[in-house]
Length: 102
Length: 102
Image (cartoon, rainbow over the protein chains, first blue to last red):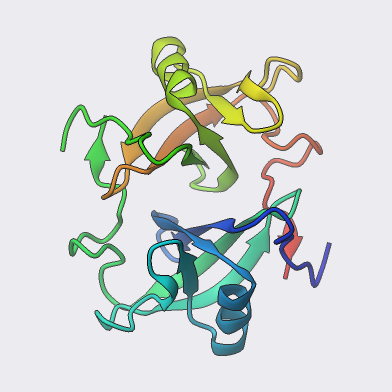
């Protein structure tokens, strides 16, 4: 399917952020329709969280995520953003949020 | 952090599934504590969905996901499973669920 849009009818959709060069998964956040629209309009990643509402990744830290490619999953309730990160993606300063071993 | 466990206090956690060889993101699903425990105990991916409850990926299709490595994110509410998939990960027969272009 080309020109697909997410299905927000059941609420927020999960957004997986992947480094387009290394393939590393950097973070997971959520989007509502407004975050989706801003991401499409600006080419940078915007998210929605229940605590913060609408937020642009990097607005505070400078660590913006430039979106190179966007994919939606089979049932249109998850988004994959392939990005070029400006610096570390994690608020802790780590390159990826997924640094905890199990 | 080593030996970390997810924080289920705010409900389900997002689980991102990535092919350990290719780095391709295959699907996103969710886990509750039981799905997490079964995944740890069996070495295969189990999930929880509001519609289906507890389910093992591959139980119907044979397309199991063998978990090679597991990571948790900075705030312990997202899981990254690096897997060896048995066949296509998507119920449509696609290798990855993220086949829709935007």
